[in-house]
Image (cartoon, rainbow, N blue to C red; front, side, top):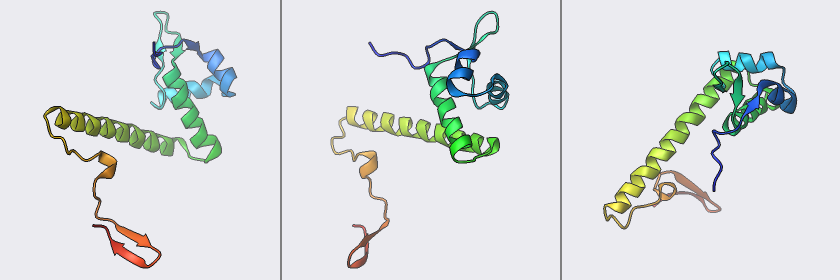
Length: 126
């Protein structure tokens, strides 16, 4: 059985130690809307596996690439939007295939009209 990535129960102290991040930093990320851990009835933050993947991405942007929190927010919003668009596109392709449209081009195989560079020079894509 596949594990649900939203499940997991890592408390803030465990996450803080595991990633070398101060708990206040994790609270800041939550205030800024970058992370949204679930809460217990007693208001204890619980970080899921999905939250940890998102945190790793945030830390990669901030630590390794030097992106500030405003930039992180922009990148995360774009990434989330791209994921939603990809899911929508896949659902549309499945619906078209289910409707009997056999020759549905795969989304990545669609013609883009871009110019292709060859060793002979530029050639318009056919």
